[in-house]
Image (cartoon, rainbow, N blue to C red; front, side, top):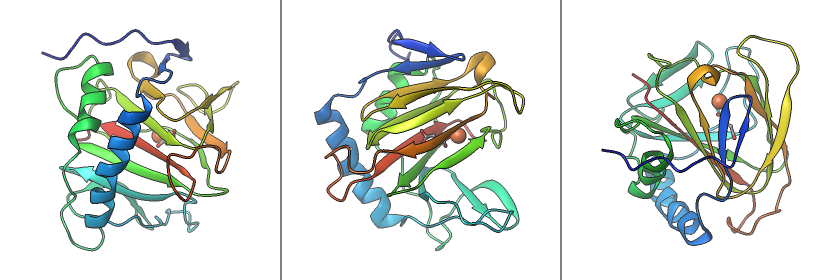
Length: 206
Ligand code: SIN
Ligand code: FE2
């Protein structure tokens, strides 16, 4: 059985926000684990079907990884370099177990690295097979301005700054809400030696 989920500190458009859910030691432990992930499955710059590369660099851990290229978006069993994705680190799974409220572990941990100037346009997470499972997002490093809209395109949006150690659960009626990152405050955090932000999204994908 999963532990009882912690109560969120706030709700934004149905997304549950847990501020500072991961303490600095826990954040450092996760970053250490991610060094092994990135050594096995190096960050790459995904191309989009629109021909424009994404400004984040990306890799994955888990049974499947998320991949974007000219032909579309999908989950794959292997990194573009041909190696199987490394396992999701235990301290990352522990966060999912604490907040997700479900008793199945995720099969994908997408790793997004935001260097200076990186952003992510408003989008839905909709490449998964079953939207009843939540998506859990972990923020590490620099502050980021997170924008949340509606489950259909357009309409008003709300924004909030996410800091290192914050966790967001995108689930329930808000599972398909549009969201994105407008900008980060580069080098606002000392967690990563060269600055930048890492966002992990955990998904039950297949
Ligand atoms: C995402 O939607 O995949 C990333 C969100 C974030 O970077 O906080
Ligand atoms: Fe997303």
